[in-house]
Structure formats: C-alpha cells, structure tokens
Length: 265
Image (cartoon, rainbow, N blue to C red):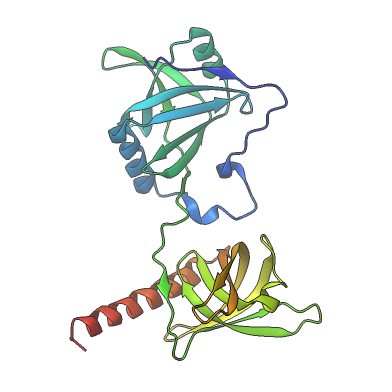
C-alpha cells in the first residue's frame, strides 16, 4: 500500500493532459501498438516510478505505483492508496488519467474504470490495458549539422506581400530544423508563429512540403562581431512518410561522415 498524499484541487482547477488534446501537436508521441504499450507498462513496473492517478475531471488525484502487468488478460495492477475514502472515489470514477515520468520521459494513459482485486495475496487496483499511450520525449531525435558547402535550403513565406524567402538550414532532426538568420529577417518571426507550406529538398529524398512552428529564438554573435539569431523550429503534423525521409537522410549522411573519418571512403 502506498502511503500517498491524496489531494483535492479547487473546483476551478483545470489540469492539462496532453493525451486529451486534439490539435495534432502530440499525435506523433502516441503509441497504439499493443506490444509497444505493454513494453512501456512493463518498464514502469520495473522502474517502480510513482504514478499520479487523476479523476473527476482532474479535481482529485492519488499517488500509487504499478506492481504488475498481466498480458494474458490485457490488464495491469496498481497498488491501492492509504486513504480509503479516496480509494472509493477512484473506484466510482468512470474516467481516470495516469501520469508518470520514466527516465525523464513523460508517460500518460487513460482508463475507464478501476476495480478491486486480489493480487499476490494483497488487495490491489486492476485496470484494462489502454488502447493508446502518450510517450512524450521531445528531444529524442539526433540532430545533424547540415553541410556548409552546398547547404540545404528552406523556402518559406515571411513577407506580408507573400514573397518567398530562402535560407540555409543550420541543422535538422526528426523533430525539426535549426536556422541562423540575419537580425532583420529574424525580426519578421516570433515564438509560436506557424510557417505553412515550407519547402526543403533533401539530397536523395526529394522535395518535402512541411509546416513548422517557431519554438525558440536567441541572439548569436560570430567571432567577427556579426550578429545573427538562432531560430529553432518544430515540425508540425509531420507524416510518417516525411519523417522516414528525414531519418533516412540523417542516417545516410552520418554513416558517410563516419566512413570518411575511419578512412573507409
């Protein structure tokens, strides 16, 4: 039994769970494969991480841990809380959200109900294996610095008159791209701005038409005293086919670089 800090939030509290958002920003972090979800649940069990179970529209929560996974019945087992009143509330809830952190990766999944059951001689909570699970790891992609000679170009529309601007990529990953822009050009951007219909031609992969969102901007001064702005942009709703093309390009370029360093090419 977990000696938890069960709490009640004020009625006006409205927690934000990424797994419930429908704007598409988090779709690529959702797992639907039963095998992948089972692997994550087993990892949570092995690590013994604390799980926060939210219910009644996030107003109540209790802390617990996952103590078992039962793939034969497609269920998992949670330790019960120390507060019997809150345990009873959780059992009556018809929608619960579980959140935890495993190796700095946020995990979220929902379930419709919990039930009491005996597990290894003790009373526990049992829930059905979720049909989807959010594994939110924003910095899971390897970032490749793009060539300085014959650079990759990004074409985007910045000017109010609809003129297209072409800039060199500083780096690229499966999550987005980095740009190094002159100060006057960067002044046309701001954090959170969406850039639609951007075009990148990756050698060996062809033309990609993508949407980007500006996530960060900071000033950089070169050794010669020139000022630039480093702009980090995230891919938005990148399809599986386009993500595969980006990853193939990165893997190929990195393999060629390693071969050159080892004298094999």
